[in-house]
Image (cartoon, rainbow, N blue to C red; front, side, top):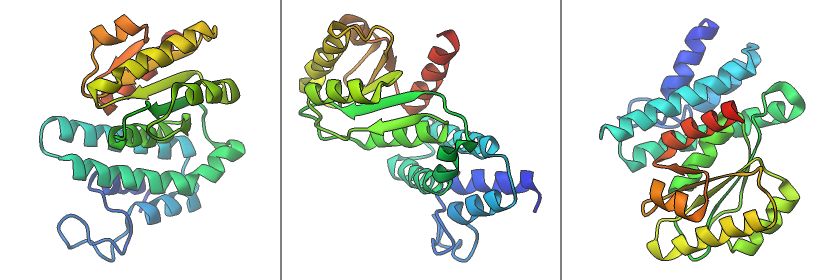
Length: 227
């Protein structure tokens, strides 16, 4: 198998959510075939460029996002692919931390206080790691004071805030105001979640509204290009 064929197989494994050789796959016929984890290990053993592997992760999840948007994939399908991405990143992470990979910047992400929904946030986190960002995920139901504390310690370039409940949107505004009050004018704040919108982002002073995970990645890349 050539390196290009290996990367194509890796991309396909992520898209269909095939984790490893013990995984039967979506149709129950894939047990015993190379999955995402084996393919990543094989790619590293064969000296495939780390950036090409990361690019493959991004291309795979972009396809997953497109399939989700067209209705061909549902949330469980996207989560299966995200699980593959997470496992793949765990394998390649030590080499990236040793300086073999690119670093596109620091990204702090959290679901705001009062909100216990984190599926969308977790998918964004996985994709950001695959795209080469250094991500600090604070989890869900995170108080604004905790977010500000970690900002001071972690010194992120970007902060992502997630909320699924209309009642917790006020927490987003509180966090943004605290960030600005502390003088972190250089930090770009991205918000997302079902009840949010472009208008709401503008109202609270956030830099970017993200419709979904693919929109988040695209807009983040744009922010990097213009900064």
